[in-house]
Length: 130
Length: 187
Image (cartoon, rainbow over all chains, first blue to last red; front, side, top):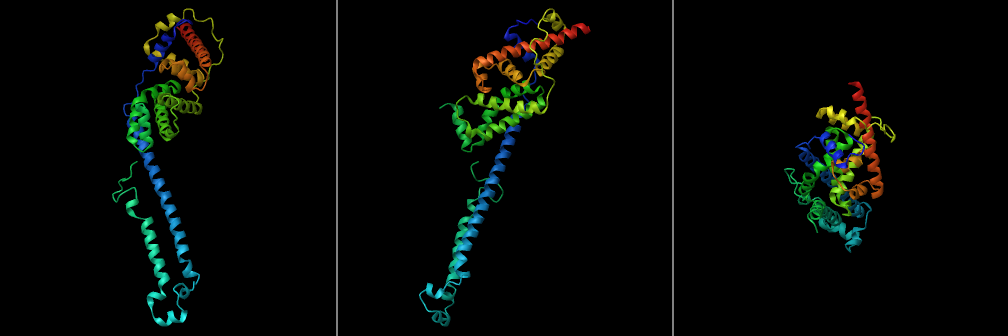
């Protein structure tokens, strides 16, 4: 062991000292961890998307139900006088706005929460390309 | 476009299995690097796992200014250094003039040691170096990486790395000289 020893010699000594081999299952462990992380990310993305949809849906409910709660003049809306509507006995006409709102919510809800849009199928298997 | 760039793009686009190529290809390099800095295989294994996770998370920020292996090596070094700071191995040697004149007769003392003892001495000497010196020696001697790449990994100039390498080597020899002298006097 001289001070002037060549770099190659120190390299050889170091390599002799560090003889540990890479654990054989290291790559498997790393890939398992990465897959688990990606799965967690996918769930997080799904939860955020779901929360956003709920928020949008609630906003839609408020906007669509506004005419009902705000006592909008239905008669004016359908171009009739209130007396004519009340006396007509036309159930459909009297409930026109409510029916429209209900239909709109159904349509909107179906659009937002369509199960086919979910990245996981009924068995919990991912259908998205992760 | 080389194969690795294509694979990186595929991983970013969601093909997770492509990342296995990088793990398989560079796990040995990452393990040796972490082992040189941390000194034991358990910590090195955890550091490598952590480094690959970070590489995976940050893959979209990889700008291909360097090779993937160089970029990964930088991550491994950072992870290993932060781990070694949490768990200091031993008192680092900073004094360069230490045992400057003690090289005489050290060779014979070293030759008398068996392989296990030699390894123990070398590892102990490396542990007593500060983390930066350990990183440089590990990258240069264990990983056999060129000075330019080490300079890029450690974000330093080529000349600076050369100088630091020289100083680290000298410190290493001094520590070894001191320890082997103590060994010799105890026989």
